[in-house]
Image (cartoon, rainbow, N blue to C red):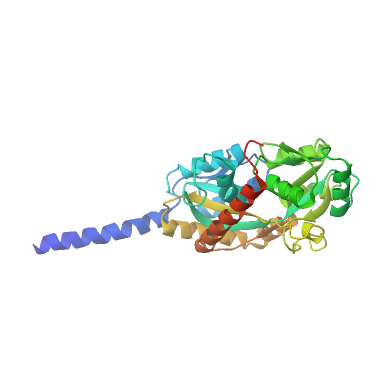
Length: 323
């Protein structure tokens, strides 16, 4: 009897230790970071920066894989259906997790319930830029130009229901201007066509627009946050001309729902370590990204609040995924 008890106690200890050993060994194989947008976009830039540093510290390959389409739903759904073992992660955005639920009649995932929030990565300075051929030097002049040419101004977006689309739709409602929406499969092609003059206006993350602003290929009119960005203190907000206008954009790291909380915390710690590196902060600041350091619980709260806030806004504006 004593020998049986000793065996059972030993077995219990072994079972308790095994998860800890497995966590300590993680990762034992390559990790895939899914980006649900086209390569070259702001989410992709951030994902590749994280992958580079994670590969070095973890001693395993961290590969970025782009699975674009359906306003980020294709790549996000892939992660939602993946095994919650930490080897398939998502670098998602506000749009994929807080807006799409209101955009699509049928969704392949729930943006809140089907994911394990790991870390809110960054607040991205969302810019209002125009092709320099448009004769406007500020927001007020652009509004006057657009009203004088109703329907002649086209704005680009990364897809129906993207933050680019929502920003422009909100601008239209607040100002009464009439513009044409041209959706693309990602932020990068939307930027390129605005640079080329095929579209005249774009609301997009500074990660994509500021390099072109510096070369004079795009003209920066404003940022969309409720107050001026600490990264661009001399650039006015849209709200300084259009009172009440505000749209902030964040990016975050997610895993599938059901991940071990200890594994979520390990990934959170590693990601926060990377985001605190001076060279990472400088690199992000140079392209208009304000890095964050949050706990999984803090990110969960932001996710729930914004899903309610922006879901209501999408419905109020009447935006549909097939627009």
